[in-house]
Image (cartoon, rainbow, N blue to C red; front, side):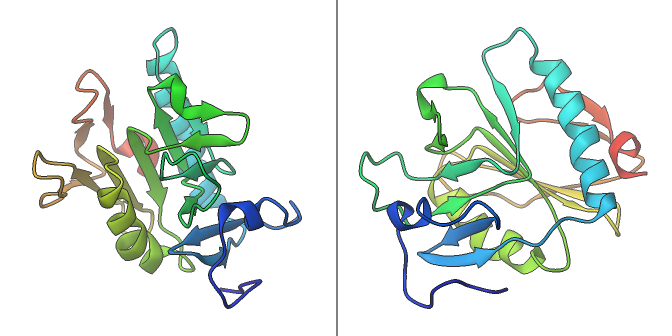
Length: 186
């Protein structure tokens, strides 16, 4: 992935960059975001619609990329973890500001792409666990499966639950939210 700098950058530096290109910062290293595929966008749109309908009238809010999530809730601008998850669900309105989310969302969804799958499965998974994202979903569009990671009491993600397109998915932290996987994967 193309990077504007080889040195570590902070959130304060990141906000000075042009909006013409999207970036994420993981461990201070900026990564340019490629435009997602049509299949990727269809999955994000379908799942966002389902989540939006489910949360309508409730305290949680659903956001899609581009939406900056500064994983640390620190009050300074020396943030080295700024991600743009495909879908974020935030239930604590105090975490929301005009720039996005400051602190860990409750639920994050990433739809894997050839250019991001390794970062989503390794670096971002580790950062989401470290910053206590309660539930993390990885959607594999070509394989038509979903991995569900749930933050356990010890602060670690357990063994992921695997869903295929015939399964009914149920969120762990929002148990009333159920969806037949074929609704979003086919």
